[in-house]
Image (cartoon, rainbow, N blue to C red; front, side):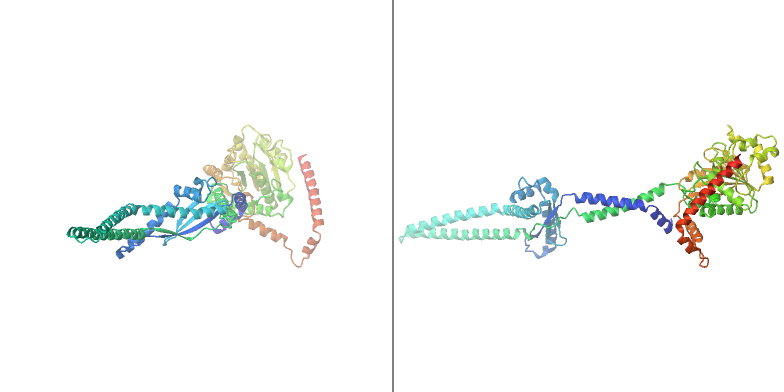
Length: 565
């Protein structure tokens, strides 16, 4: 698909893209503006690991610090911490721990020992209180867990110190009780007590040194958590972000609309443009008839010969003339794939422009099931084609069956009474005799046949005629239907000379033809002076035009009635 085709597709479905964009944006704005505002309070924590005295463990210390930060980040959101934090903040009965689990989030700052704790809550003050309470509770918990490892050892050393202290006091009391006696026995006992007292004091000093070492090791081994930035009540909510949600929804809605447009086009197998015809078949597009609500189904070639639609019929006429350069095409069958595609209107207007070019044309209504040409021309449908096929001598009564029209060189042969075996009549030898008889005095016979998918009449006619024209309704006729018609025609060796794209919607590639055609006919030469007159009397000229058109139509009806009688 070329860039121009994408652009045409975008312009075609711009309303859908705009609609989905507006709906998505409106829904997002409505929902976002009615959501409860959520505030976020954040606190930043610094995790300090215990100091290692070994220089060879620096890399291991780094890894341990990262793992410790990750561990603390998970522990901060544990249920016991949240319950304790709610109690510490005095919010029991106000905040549900289950709701807080969904509202709290912890995020590590990469390549650092910092942790960001976020608490989201509808009340900004409560959010700040909880954000500050959680680290306090967690610090108490971690300190308690870490000091418990040294508690038993310290208690044992403290008990030893207490016992040694009592022994020292008791020994010292015994020494004091000996007094100043100098006899040999007293001196011996004094020496023993002094030696024992010295041992007790030495042991006491050693135990005290061990206790201090344990306390120092405990202090070095503690992992501390410090609040770097305490939480403050936020002033603005973090969500809902009404503007952002609306813009994102509009973008998504536009993409969904664009995707839906591409999906519809992908699933749409109708024939809409001449490019589709070129892709499906090798047949050429004889002409493109634009869609016009006011002129659809009318004899526009007779009522408005300067219309660009009529010029499109003349293009079809030129295509037919080029198709018959080697062998003139004197009998044409106009058909379509399905009913309602405008093949009868195309046949009638094509017969008019052919007759206007100087050819003697007979328009034959060969739709022996649902004929419409007599209604289109305002004529009775009494004898017509079926009557001609039942005549013994065509030369005697044929002139009474051919009805002249207001167009010079154009005659109409209506369908006549509807038979019960139309296919047999159209494929009979009598029809061939009728065609040969009419071609003696006329240049071209145009057969308006039924739709090819509904009945086999067009295939029967196409087999014995010089050419077949297939009319398709742009945007309605499906590709399989067109392919089936062309396949059936190919089976009987019918000469399909081309396709007429009817009811074409302007705005596609062929729309430029009508654009420049309108510019050509609306442009006035600078020397003529007609442009100013037209601009000056536009309203009066329009009124006169409508009046003249009504008078012309009345006169046309009177003439048709006269021919009918």
